[in-house]
Length: 268
Image 1: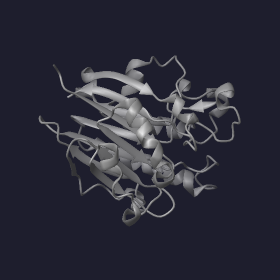
Image 2 (image 1 turned 90 degrees about the vertical axis):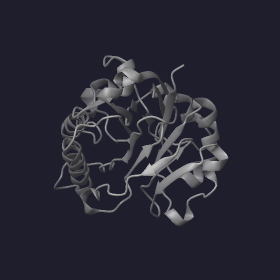
Image 3 (image 1 turned 135 degrees about the horizontal axis):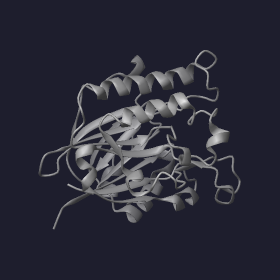
């Protein structure tokens, strides 16, 4: 019997506010690893016993007050990668990397929270948009240094890269998260040795979303979503992919995030 690894990624939009929802994800996905983004908590205030309560006792987190922040909870032992880049020299807690001890060759796991980029798709008028493009460019250059192997990259990458990753490609071309500079940059980053794990199962002509705005009163009826949350695997792991789930019902969890979790299972 082949061993498997199940990993869930979720922009939780405050781990302290929504930590009671994590057992719902554990029950739904039975994950070996949960990666969170936008934890919004400095490290000294991170819920110390949360990993034990989830049955995922190996925990890494990198956070700051009020915004950003990433965390990893794992059933398997984690060995942190200490020398990750200081992206855009901002020290803003957007990336964690760790080796996952699988009993075989470890898997290198990256958990990213890419900048949202503000509202105006113009570098000069909106420095946040420029920061986002610079972040993607730096990440692309970093991963170009060596082809990834036995690697998984997950997170809220804050870009819907394909036409059917948004409810209307034509109407969102000038909306931050789907502008050509963003989508071209993200697709180029992924193409440097990674495979889009969810699109491995779902053809690109099918609509697929992981985020629905809080502004939509009836988000299911309008279904104006975007696929901002991603799981990539290195090309050597593509044949190991087993299944995926987008936990759409999580959008209706009490005080839920505007993002929903994404889960992928692969052989290890």
